[in-house]
Image 1 (tube, protein in one colour):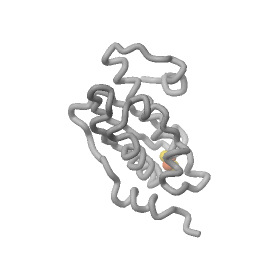
Image 2 (cartoon, protein in one colour):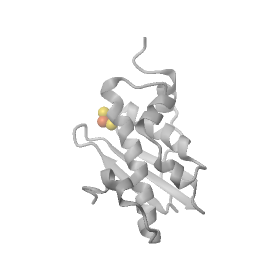
Image 3 (tube, rainbow, N blue to C red):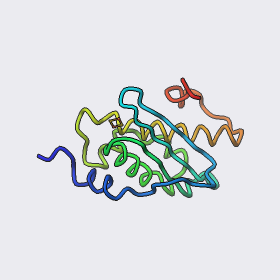
Image 4 (tube, rainbow, N blue to C red):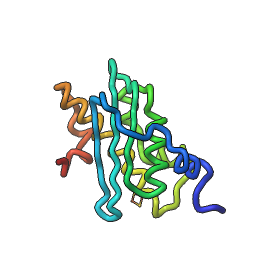
Amino acid sequence: MALYSEKVMDHFRNPRNVGVLEDANGIGEVGNAKCGDIMKIYLKVVDGIIADVKFETFGCGSAIASSSMATELIKGKPLSEALTLTNQAVTEALDGLPAHKIHCSVLAEEAIKRAVLDYYKRQGIEYDKELFKDVEEGED
Ligand code: FES
């Protein structure tokens, strides 16, 4: 069996939603201290819906494929749905990742959470701290 699925290869070679969103109103950045990879997610939220999303990932192929798939999964969706996106869902949508690459999909989940948190903070919207406890620690 190939190490990487067709979907991983496709999203790695032709990543969707790459770039910077100039009018983003929620931005989330995370890094993995061990591998040094960095992922940044830009959200444009309109009426509680993710009208647009882009990403910049300085990282491995799995991180790029994970960001690409994650942005596809949350585009056009309500924020509440984006917050429930797990790295398992991203991995499944990619038809799997090798075990030692699972942490790459975790970056996507965390970057999205941070971007939503950033949106809530900018807008002064009350949020459930419990939902963000994993990503708020160590925030810059
Ligand atoms: Fe670090 Fe993939 S090896 S994100």
